[in-house]
Amino acid sequence: MLAHDIAAAFRQHFDAEPLLVRAPGRINLIGEHTDYNAGYVLPAAVDKEMYFAVALNQQSTIRLHAYDLNESVQVATDAVAPSETQWANYLLGVVAQLQQHGITVPGFDCVFGGTVPAGAGLSSSAAVECGMLFALNTLLQANLEPMQIAKLGQAAEHEYAKVLCGLMDQFASVFGRDGQVVRLDCRSLEYEYFPFDTTACRIVLCNSGVKHSLASSEYNTRRQECEQGVAVLRQHYPTIQTLRDATLDQIEAHRQELGPVVYRRCRYVVEENQRVEETCRLLVQGDLGGVGQQMYASHAGLRDDYEVSCKELDVLVQIAQTTPGVYGSRMMGGGFGGCTINLVATEQVAGFVEHLKAEYQRQLGLPLETYEATIVDGVGIFKE
Ligand code: GAF
Image (cartoon, rainbow, N blue to C red; front, side, top):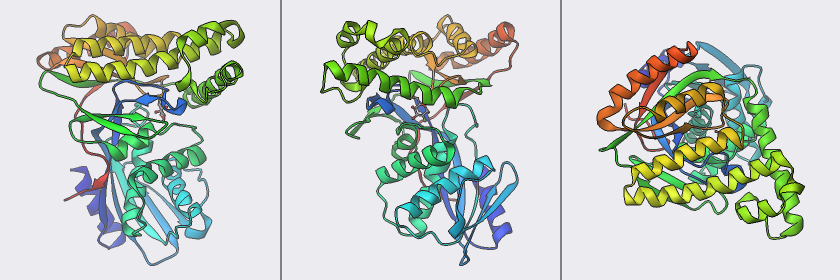
């Protein structure tokens, strides 16, 4: 098993006994691009995980080794700065955050690797950040609260990866709970767990295999467009702080002033927040068909109003929509590639996977990887 191999590689490399940590990637049932608008999200941690073997080394150097790539980076503890080696930035970004918060980080060694597919929209970056933070918090006895870990991971992403992400991914990697999705109010940071019963229905991820290069620049542009919308609306409704506070009627009333693009961005965010609340209600009622309809509506909004989908994702959703046993399907995460999330009747999963693979190949000439996701606990110690 990979975690054992990583631990063994650590012992061989550094001749010491490491702390072992696991940090999961995430899915998001619904609530996309709502987190940085202080809205609602409904993610869960899944069994695609990153593993870390970490120990303090009594030196003033940080020695990092990426097991999957067989690459190493070494940095002095007093010279932590963005690296040209992209993967190292997620780890060093976290160290920089701890240092900025007055926590002295002594030299340490780390071997890490995992099963979260990179670029698939399962947030391998948040898993790396939160796993590293959890390990250092434990070794340094820094007493960081779980929410602080999530927030420091987000700040590392802003400063070292230059993506102005919301809190959802890091929150899910830390707060995930076995068998449950969790609704986060991204303003108050209050959260509530909802059981996700896998007897009748499974979560299947379809990896489009593409990641268009505009993903991070367009992500930051969407944030700005939402802020522009808020600036316009606030002139008329001073209590509006974020799009979370706006109503569809208000957006409609100022459609001209918002302009066509910002108007559509705002409309999407307001509707998506409503869909998260509706989805939670439907989940409690066990109405999977209803949940699925919310997912299709979310995809349509992301495609037409928010414009963060792409041809490959649209084709995957279209195929799913006409496949027997599918409750719902939509693109997941930031967009412009990565995975779709599909709710599929348990007994139809095999047929679904076979059909999607064949049709994706037939329509776009592309291979398709699929994963059945199991919902697991958030970051923690890995027991060998
Ligand atoms: C990415 C970001 F990291 C999240 O914060 C979130 O905004 C998501 O895109 C879209 O919902 O995963």
